Length: 397
Ligand SMILES: Cc1ncc(COP(=O)(O)O)c(C=O)c1O
Image (tube, rainbow, N blue to C red; front, side, top):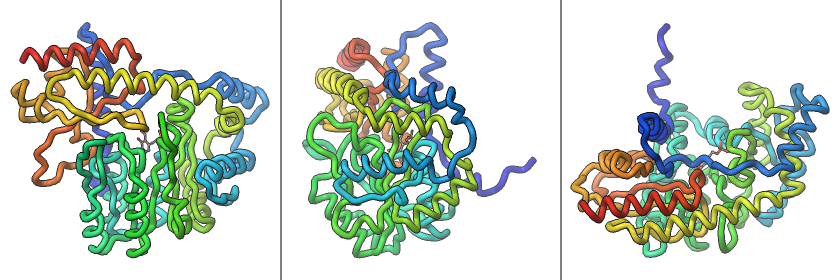
């Protein structure tokens, strides 16, 4: 068989290769501290599990509407609308098997081949993969490090938007950077979108994963609801990464197009999983306990990293990632290649993490080196022990 040539344009999540290396190192009898994957080692709240079991027992095992069961669409419209202070109807909601499918369905419904699409770099790698797969023109935009985290290079966004972009992907509460926009930065992105008539995908996978302050959706800014599709997911908020449940929030005409794509792709999202989603939104108390644990881990990670020689990072208010600058740590350990540095860290200390390169092609002239630690899949004691080892290795090199 000959594979279709368009597959040459399909990317992937190269971070999975880091998992493989970590698994191999473990299989050889070594201790591994897993900071590499954005998965969670926390259980889904009991009420959600019970609701799914009941839905199966009740026979909710058949096909259901492509756009989602009416009670879930209604619950999502109310919940997402409340949290973002924007009026939403069930007709704006199209249920999906996870948040990720919203990326491809946004691109399939709003981008023509040859259209330019702006997206963050460093950023979630699936944006670039899907833009290129469907024949779009990739327009990655930069961030720069600030004393409190990272900020979007707005001049870069303006310059790229002026080159004839059609769409913009915006991930506030950002993976991998852990950063969020100031109100001014978000408004500037909205202004650019309006000026260039861009369709916007607002990836809000981490909207609720925050430890202080409040999240704002760019879709709630004046004039933005009509040009924005929100990616919403149950994955992180309810520790439901493997359940595959999320939705697109979109203007009705776009929602209908996305529902048609659903019919063509998966027919519908698993019926009994949707019933469990209704219960998660009805009683979200389990999500608060998850967040409290993640906050302990955030503090343990940032505190331990502060003691690692040659690494510096801010204390993010949101997500479950930190993205330290590791330039000096690499110099101290004699590495110029960030991939080799990560491999050496795994072999010397068992600490496994991703690097900047897993989140898009570095821009010409990038001199600083960064790595990403995810603390969603590792307990506080292991965080402290693992990063302690990392610090000893770097300090004694
Ligand atoms: C920024 C971002 N968007 C989307 C997703 C996909 O979420 P889901 O697992 O719900 O498909 C992730 C998952 O890690 C993510 O980090």
